[in-house]
Amino acid sequence: MRAVVATAFGGPEVVEVVQVGVREGVFGGAGEWIGLGWDVAGTVDAVGDGAAGSAWGVGDAVVVLAPGLVRPLGSHAEYVLVDAGAVAAAPRTADVVHAATLPLNALTAAQALDLLELAPGQSLLVTGAAGALGGFAVQLAARRGVAVTAPARAGDEEFIRSLGAVDFVSGEVGAARFDAVLDAAVLGEPALEWVRDGGAYMGVIPEAHPASVRGVRTASVGVRADGARLAELVGLVDEGALTLRVAGTYPLDEASKAHARLAEGGVRGRLVLVP
Image 1 (cartoon, rainbow, N blue to C red):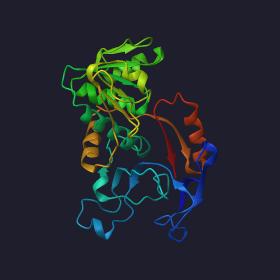
Image 2: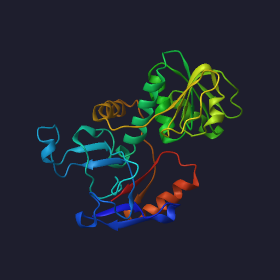
Image 3: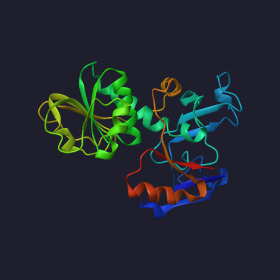
Image 4: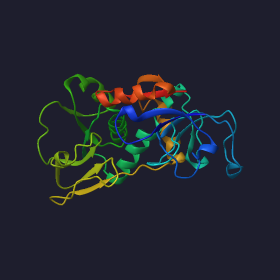
């Protein structure tokens, strides 16, 4: 089986496609590489004994979040082993490439909004709203009745407003006027300055949020697999309430090129690896 791994820490040049199997230790042991990827979309090839009696059968079209920071095998592979409880039926209205863009960023956005606990009518600024995570956050927050503002490039205004943002900022944001900030662009302390006294800041890298100031509650979301919640998000896709965006596709063997493109920045949507 082919899988995408990093053989050292570094830039896109450390990304390799390797042939893996039980003998190489990718299902346990120290290994000599780190598996890459969290998003999965595809069809069930086999159901293990531990999933007997589950709703899943061979041939089912599914999406999954397969989380894990340091592990020998990630989702960028021809086959992926996942927990049955993390699985959701794939969207009926999207092909497998678009479906692959949903799990990680949509679950992160939904779980971050849960932690913020905003009520309808409260204000939220979403950084990186033109990106995949930020775009889902705008749509999900607007659906909850939250008034969303998005700082972004002027060329992104029409798209961001179409997601449900009520205000758009292409210049200076101003200080301390929002009930909360969801920092999808990972700006850190500068974004904290846009939260009112006693408001909330939510980061998207676990334990990397700035320290509290002015009574602002600061935290970060650590996304977790949740098949039931993912199924709800799939339902929103099929209703047309969540937008799936593919910025480009690459064969699995060209994973390093996809990483290089991502490192260039300015990607609108997700880059998808196709085995």
